[in-house]
Image 1 (tube, rainbow, N blue to C red):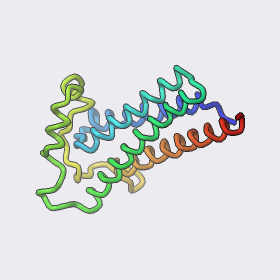
Image 2 (image 1 turned 135 degrees about the vertical axis):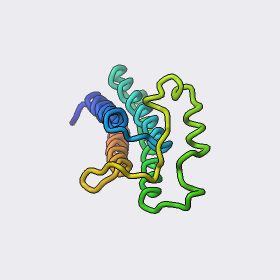
Image 3 (image 1 turned 90 degrees about the vertical axis):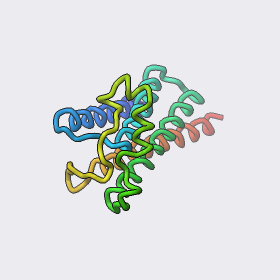
Length: 169
């Protein structure tokens, strides 16, 4: 059996690595993040912060289930955002419906976190613009993989926690 506390740390490290690489692409390679990129960053932050709180707190039973329910919900939201972003890249919509200067961009840029930390949370790019690929996968494709990995891990933890509880009772 694995230590669930170490899994929380691993999830946190995945999120920090992805966010760090996104900042590298933005600040060094000069790729501007779009509204979907920023929304996914927020999801990574929520997953990562929940995971590090779980690691520090190291709860048992219900507390652990609450943390992993939150990780599951945040990673599912991130997965849905990444899938939608991948769809927009794969099947570009007419100009009127594309992500660009839009209500979503204005909404995200008006959030206090975008004003507080603009290099992390300010959306300026075009969602359908692909300027980076690795192994024929775009940034949102990689994000789908990472969110799916985190989602599978968190659901596995939830089910193993419930099974252990029922075995003990």
